[in-house]
Image (cartoon, rainbow, N blue to C red):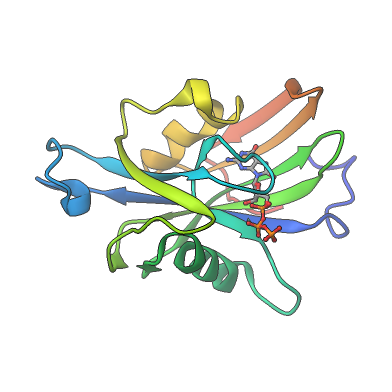
Length: 173
Ligand SMILES: Nc1nc2c([nH]c(=O)n2[C@H]2C[C@H](O)[C@@H](COP(=O)(O)OP(=O)(O)OP(=O)(O)O)O2)c(=O)[nH]1
């Protein structure tokens, strides 16, 4: 899957997909059923789109530390039980990365808008795919359903040109 990629040299990044189950997920008075927290990114790579919170791993930081820090910085909550759900190599004209995807169900605090992100809960069966990275629709349903994946997505001119994915595998490189 990653034989042609310099995975050790690519920048690492994280994404967090928080799933809230129960009668009133998110505590926002919304409908019953599973919901997931997405942010509308205000700046950086992919700004304007809906994505899971996350960002680049800093020097000396583990991916687990990164995902907790990024969620706190972007929406002001503490994720308590992040687990690895997937990993993908992302290649494009201007930005390449290894992206580590986490799933979580426990958190402390209430998501708040920050300078970086506008958070909103979405029903897991009604996600805004038209305003998301195109290849997220390939893997996000598996992650929200408790599954795992590995993928390789090559974009050029903003369009996915190569899409490879396997599910039900250990989410490591
Ligand atoms: N959902 C989704 N996110 C992706 C894809 N490819 C990709 O690089 N990303 C994410 C991973 C990182 O979270 C983000 C790029 O980092 P960023 O610009 O948000 O980093 P950051 O918030 O730490 O920003 P900075 O302050 O470090 O510049 O883009 C993709 O295909 N789908």
